[in-house]
Each structure stands twice: as structure tokens, then as C-alpha cells.
Image (tube, rainbow, N blue to C red; front, top):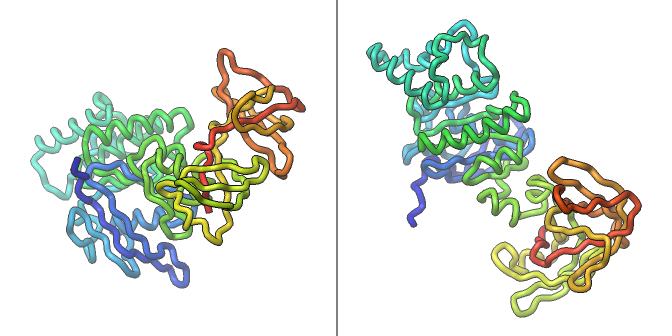
Length: 365
């Protein structure tokens, strides 16, 4: 199957603010029709990159092309993009219809075409029937939909989203994540989302670029990022992770042998991203997700296991995080166990055992 064409091409992009380097040699390709997220902590450069794509700022060096055309010197209103801001930026003195139609004013379209396009945009974002409602009478989710409709009505090739869900409460934010993803699939245009929320990025994206310190650390699908992070830094940012200090002790027959704190000798299959040469002379850790570990009262008859003491537990509804102190490790190991019928509960101070599959361990530097 042929991969979609590139919609946005960022090459060797650099942005300086005085002596501060906000973006440092960033290169990136975003595909046509893709829901792409820029994910990272505050100050990592993700919003700066979005604003450069939108044309609100000019790069210090490097190039940006959209649909094969250079954006050098092209102002924001001439680019095939539109932007939805964190604050939504809808006009409180206008009703829904007027807010959505506002962007069409400069196009000088016939009134009947304006009415048709407004009706279609409101239908797409499920606001049909609210045309006359004042902006001040809308809920947070409805205001966000108005901002989306106003952006989509101009039929951009790329919709840029600057943390558009951050002002919503948790339940509404999760609902809007599903709605935004459904909307993107229905209209088929390229979405580029900036977020610091890992769960939001994982739930909505086709691919994600994880950024730290003005650089891109990894670009991958949500599953690849979670299951095969490129570095300890990425692994720590995407979901929970236990890190065990380790030394590479040998390689043979497509496997790598490690001596790891607490769990001792383990063998891991070499493969993509696990080339032994990556680890030569580096400080190594083995990462394992809490949900890839199992906790039990009795030591299993077969398989790897270590004994420890349960020193704490945190209940999250669908799951419980158990904190187990084991010999040879200062920090407790975190194990996630699903709650529900048949789930075993453990009391603080109980002697327990942790088991794992070797495939759950990811070597990282």
C-alpha cells in the first residue's frame, strides 16, 4: 500500500529568541489526511513549531513546505492552514451563525453560499439548530465546536490545534477527544495537534512527535511509542514505567544478556531498536510497564519471579497500583493490576511475588 503524500515538510528548522534556542535542527514530515500530534512538556518547542507552520513567526533557519510549496515569506492569511486556539477566540457579542461566518467576510461570497457553508459547517460539528444562540450561552464543548466550525468553513488543507481541550473538565475532554478524531476522519484533512497530555495524544493520533528541549526525540505511532520507546526520556514521558539499572553482559544467537538490579540475569531478543551496538559504553536501564508485571501471593512453580513486600497501593477504579519493595533495589517496583471479578486484593505489609515475561523488558539508554 502506497503511503500518503507529504502535506507538511519541515527541514532543518531553527528558531532563536535572542540567545534562547526554541527549536534546534527540527526535520519532520506530516502526511496528507493524518492526525498528527506534537507532544512534550512545557517549553519543549511544540507551540513554537505550530506557530511557524501557521506563519505567525518566521524561522531563524530552515524551511517549511505545505503541499509541496515553500512557505517562506507567505503570511498566515495566505497559507492553506487555519488554527484553533486554546482560548477558542470566539466573539462573545456574536451569535453562533455570525461567529462561524466571520472568516468568510474577506472572500466576498454571495449570501446564499455563505448560508450554505455555515449550515454545512454547523452540521459537521453537530451544532445544527443553535445558529441563533449567543456565544455567552454556550457550554465549553459547544464553544470549542464553534471554533472548529469557523476554522473548517474556510476549507483549509491543514487544521492546526493549539491545546484546544485543555480548558475542559476531564469528562468533557475525553468526549471531545473522540469527537475530534471522528471529525478529522469525516472531513479527511490533515490535523496537527499540540498537547502536553500524553493520554490525549495516544487516544487521537495516527502518529506522534515527542519533543524535548527544542528537538524531536521520536516520531512513531501511539503503539510504537508506548511499546518501543526510543529512549529512557521518551519512555518516562509516555505512561508509567519501572526502570531497572542493567549491564549488557553478552550477545549470542540473536539475544542480548543483561544483569539487572533486583531481577538478575535476563535474555532479550535483539531486533529493531535493540541493536547491541546502541548500548556499547552507555548507561543502560531495562524498562517495564506496570501492567506487564503480575503480582501474586505465592511464588509460581515456573518462570521468573522475585519476592518482596507490599508497601503501598493506590486505587484507580479500573485498576490498582501496587508498590512492592524488593531486595537489591532502593525504589519500589510498581505493578498495575486490573480490578473486577476475581481480582485478588493485597494488604500492606503482605509478602508477595512479582513475575514477568522477558518480552515485557525494553532495553533503553
